[in-house]
Length: 285
Image (cartoon, rainbow, N blue to C red; front, top):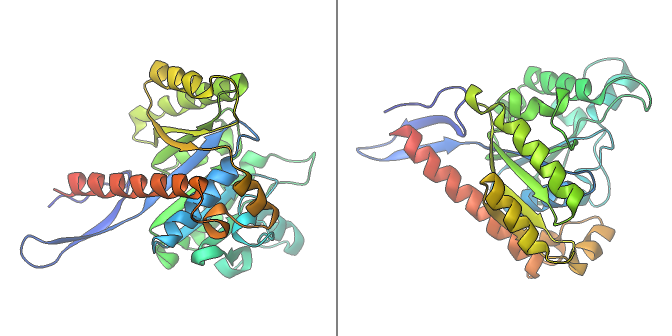
């Protein structure tokens, strides 16, 4: 039996139990990128809620100085961002509990935060936060099934590339609409991630179409996907339900689970899990 190496996409370790039976323990690690304002946090938090509703242990890490990625998992509140904690207390946190909150479905919510506005570099803040989380042995202690990174940045550079460069994420989802600048940003992100492919870093899993109801939107995104050779793995409808739920500080998975939008997120979460399990089996044997 072959155990996947350190840079493998999902396997943490495997145990052989009985003759011919393998119990697999894997961690699905996903980074969500896209143009600013395209709905990355909506997609990420709803995926986190969807995974949690399937009984998975989930961590969501917001990688944005605004520190609002997890707000709809926490009823409109957020944990103290890591960078804010370090500024306010002039020391590193000693426990994960100091910089996290438990949200809907047991999702562990963390926000990197950023420097004082106008000072410092937010990308360096992300790198410092990831280093701290390693020192606190976040993943060894919490043992999540799924880790989601909600990442700022139209162009993947510097610290904002840390989730894909440093092995934290194995799959990248690119969120876009049919708007010209959203597709432009999606192309930049795809090109940036491709630059890392030969180093066994994260790869783009596919495109999530977050509908804005622009003219011929589906056709435009499908044409772009064909051009860059990526599948459209999720289609999120333009939805009043999402807006209503976010006004209440919750995801549509929590607030209106039978809605078409919630079902779209659940379908994508299920596909990601099934793909992860298939890949795990291929890498084990």
